[in-house]
Amino acid sequence: MNDKKQFHVDWARCIPFIGIHIGIISLCFVDFSWTAVLFGIGFYCIRMLAITGFYHRYFAHRAFKTSRWFQFVGACVGNASIQRGPLWWAAHHRDHHLHSDTENDVHSPTISGFWFSHMGWFMTKEHFDLKEDRIRDFTKYPELMFITKYDTVVPALFFALCLAIGWSWPHLFPDAKGVWALTVGQMIAYSFFASTVVLYHATFCVNSLLHVWGTRPYKTADTSRNNALISIIVFGEGWHNNHHHFQSSARNGFRWWEFDPTFWALKVLSWVGIVWDLKEVPPHVIHRTADAEVDKDETTSADVHRNLPTAKTRQEESVTSEAL
Image (cartoon, rainbow, N blue to C red; front, side, top):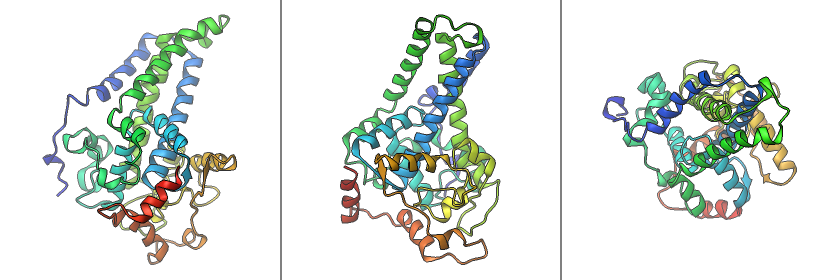
């Protein structure tokens, strides 16, 4: 039973996570800077796209294909969001789809409560380990295993990048004054601490809020919901009921008016050949409603995650070899 009382928070390993939240106090000790704000927004957008496009739609759902080198680029940029390694993230997400809103779902607000689903689950000792059996199709890549095992290396490099930008800005743009000036302290406060904390909780809202607040145009075996407001801040992930209806699609915003910049970015990358074979949603699946019965395509999409085999299959070998 997924009773949150049986889990134990590993406070020592949560020190960096807690420290980043405490770090936003640094905003009170630096002057306001529009330059710092723009850098913070920029790093938020880049890292959010890596989380939504690569951690989620690529590593967790294999919704498109790309080269080995670019999958590593996406993994590194996503790792800069400081949400642990790509394979740990994707494996737990696959586990969520396998057990959505059941007692075995580690972050279901209807089972374990809002705050445990929002952030408590990944702070526990029981959920720190990588579930390799859920992500066998990517564990063959040593570079992905490295940044998953040593998931603080890229965040440390991101911190160093913020330091470097803050230090070099006055030398590169000596005429930038007032709110357009930029110091090391401003860069760390806005781009590292504040940007990361906002990125954290925007991402976490998908697990918590999007199972309690929004609309359900499709009948799924869980409590997933669509929320246009959240979709804005998580770049298309807010169409969560759409996603649970047809999980393997690269496109969460099924209709033209459903804001999904993650899919738009992937589409642009496909035009220049960096990614390819983006999985679309069949038209008849899009137009189904909550009153309709679950159709074969929807069930097949769910089965990708509900029937994970215990040994690597020939199909998995084919998929991973094509990523090269």
